[in-house]
Length: 359
Ligand code: NAD
Ligand code: IPM
Ligand code: MN
Image (tube, rainbow, N blue to C red; front, top):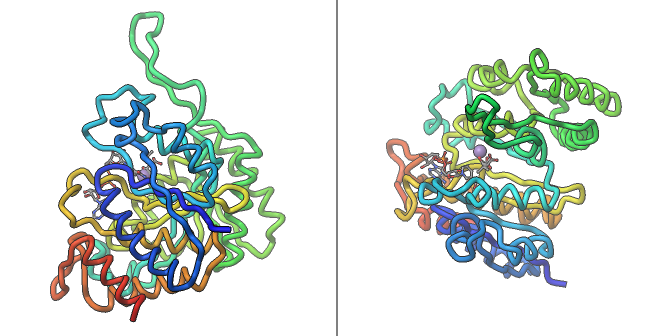
């Protein structure tokens, strides 16, 4: 049985980076006889322009019937004036929610070749290897009530609700503890339990679930401190588990430790490791269409797909080694460029990875 991958390139740099990831994956598909088939569909602003909705039913059905989804990025200034319900980002959030992709893994690894690309001192970041586990289908992103209403006094009020049930916290806790068990067995749960009751519950459920994992050392940290610690001494962390919005923000901070947001892949998984794979960055409207975006986050997302959904660790490692070799060969996209390196385009970086795979 062929395994189907839904390919949603999206907006902005989305099509540019996805093309490079598909180039790499297609080669491996043939070389290792992986039996993958690809099917493209529209999402985000591109889908809105064609169908008047950021998540057409055909796209959602394709994703539901596929074994995995590869996504580029959605959004951009062109669609900012649209009503909330049809904004490109709703398409992405819709897939996460409809496919129940509650567990979002965002690994931040500093490739030693990129020490110079980080804005932090080498001794602070060298050897960095941390995993952020972000709850993805709950919290303030999805809580009701929400919206903008006119209050009794005629003034407008905006409202979003941060809400987590025990079962939602428990399942992301289990995901995070299991990941920590396979790593260095340290899990830091990030919350705001000193202020928000919802995260007081988060903390107590994390502690309770932790009793099932006595080999994992659980700690708790407030999110404001965690943001500071990530920049001060990021290597103190092994695995971080946190709620939807805190995870969104902390993973962009973690991205900069690795040199560029163009380096951070992600996997969004359901309870059966079916998943969507995407870089953590957005559609980068400021550089879209110029062929200069870094495709490595998307290429590394494909490696995560091979590892988590298709159970092909050898294929995943081949991609990761090829990325390493490409960086060894000193090619750099603009975002990770430093003196003495060779600046390459998006497709130049894709070619470097491909050549390393072939070599
Ligand atoms: P962004 O991540 O798109 O860009 C932030 C900065 O990082 C920009 O300067 C951009 O040029 C740079 N950057 C991002 N990816 C890069 C890459 N691969 N190579 C080199 N540089 C890269 O965030 P933003 O500007 O806040 O958002 C732009 C749009 O993207 C918005 O519409 C937002 O909603 C959307 N967005 C989508 C996703 C997603 O689809 N998963 C994620 C974040 C933001
Ligand atoms: C991300 C993005 C999305 C999020 C947006 C585009 C909905 O920032 O994947 O990190 O906030 O989750
Ligand atoms: Mn984000």
